[in-house]
Image (cartoon, rainbow, N blue to C red; front, side):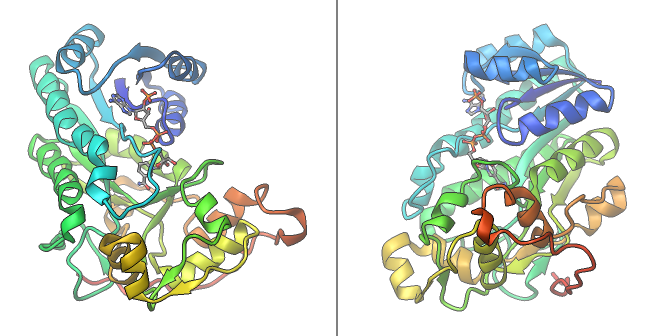
Length: 330
Ligand SMILES: NC(=O)c1ccc[n+]([C@@H]2O[C@H](COP(=O)([O-])OP(=O)(O)OC[C@H]3O[C@@H](n4cnc5c(N)ncnc54)[C@H](OP(=O)(O)O)[C@@H]3O)[C@@H](O)[C@H]2O)c1
């Protein structure tokens, strides 16, 4: 297929482009910068300069490229620091997930593009009651914290608009596997504590596994939503110490909910204590996808082995490790 990847120069895009090419697809990849275009070209794709928020330019680029498939992987999250004003921090990404999606879907309709895959998100989306691991058809959180309402609505828009148009929304886990992953510095500096009981469940995904599932979704997926997450959704209190150790950092601090609320805001408290994780059963069943890193336990070690100081490095614990994932329920 001739695939038009919006966000080809980014964290997931740069893993996706080579895997698409390896699978025999022709790729046109967007970036807004010359450096990004160079990266996209080096990966084997044809670079196109494009701002997704420029509707006319998007239409023109899609008309000119005549793709058979469009993949939306554009986000703007490089300055995510303090999440106290969550929607303010996510404002540009929210536009990419609303205006950006609508513009691309309109261009896809106009040009008869039949395959459409877009990036969505899995953790901290679902109703905060009942089982700790949800499937795709579980109800979303009906009462998101006020500071994150717009961001939750933008992700919901991706899911509904894309699936409604016959496309596929991939609710990815938290990405890891790159040298500049967002949590590395805060965890190293012990600025990412376990809040309260740390019961909030997160779903993780290695970037290479996310890219592999995206290729399969494009080739075999049915219209709708798929979780692209690893096999082991886990509470913050479990994965955070393992991540700290993999990075050669000291164990995370613990802070009470009231203090976290004061310093970091309610959204962070909810993510740390009430978030639900996601099951990958549907993606495995329908896409025939198997993650190369079934759990963050071995994934963190593999991803960050060279990042930890030599004296703190441990061998990969994945070989023969056994652990039971939380029970699936919706
Ligand atoms: N599920 C997750 O956990 C998740 C999801 C998203 C991001 N992240 C993480 O957040 C960190 C920062 O991510 P990021 O989103 O800032 O950067 P990124 O992942 O490196 O890339 C974002 C991509 O979106 C493109 N983009 C941004 N604004 C655009 C626009 N207006 N029009 C067209 N394309 C646009 C960028 O292209 P340009 O070359 O034009 O800049 C780039 O290709 C990364 O570590 C990433 O892994 C995690």
